Image (cartoon, rainbow, N blue to C red):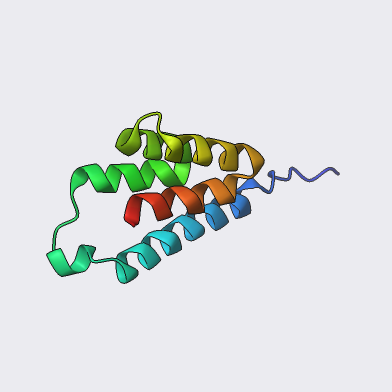
Length: 92
């Protein structure tokens, strides 16, 4: 009898979601968003896009500037460095 096994993608998906939530929590706690009691919808959208598609989030703020090209290269070299740089550029 052959057991029908599901692919093990849910663990990777859950880990990615947990990492994304942890990143947003760290950004929120270390930035001055909570001091203003306002996080603009534009900034929120940029950060969410920076987590899923890092160069797009940076492009929305800086266009085709140096920050975009650095983030694009970092994303192509490794997805995680692209995310880290994108969030850093958008928050700082």
